[in-house]
Image (tube, rainbow, N blue to C red; front, side):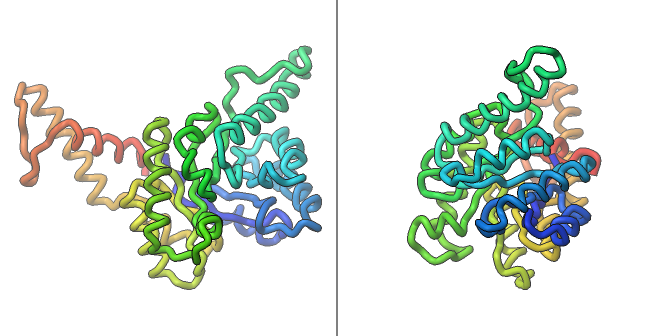
Length: 296
């Protein structure tokens, strides 16, 4: 799993969207929600459809509007048939929110497949394909993170939205707030319980504060996040560097696996490496690192 940097681009601005799609971001989120004014929603939707068609080589996500808005269903009806990599569902507050979106995806993909097979309307049974990233950014969403993570086989990863979460709590956004640490821990625990990869952390809104972004990224990684949302191409390198393993980390992981496996083959129950006692949790963490970043 190498998806570390998720770059937002407004669907209403073709120039910015094309720049994002040509960037080094691991995934690009074409946005139909917060970055698009109500008067621009329809035009942005048409833009996004064309962008997804034109960039099949890219893992493109589309952030649709929240289910509580009048635009959400139209977003899904327009975008899902184009089969982007996935849908980002904002303001995900319950398992039923995710299940509803998953059901719509099933129906749309099933209808497409049915037309091919001559069985119009057949659901896309067993066809996971298009994935869902629930964006958890309210107190209700944080409270229901466990059930949201388990709501559908289409759920790929959870994403944390700290700015809207802070607003929902009635506090000013502060990247160091303990309120954010609580929410982050809830998403990390929910992801682990659901056997999902670690979640994606919130944006850092100060685009020119490179050191602040680095600190925020390091904190998120230490907690268990596997990547971060960014809002400007200039933030990509910092986040990629933080969430990528160093050469030393990869070499240590390889050495731990080799030493442990050799000891097991020789019937040695306890073995030390660089002054550390190697046991099953240490081995499994080394294997996780190698699995997450295989081929890098």
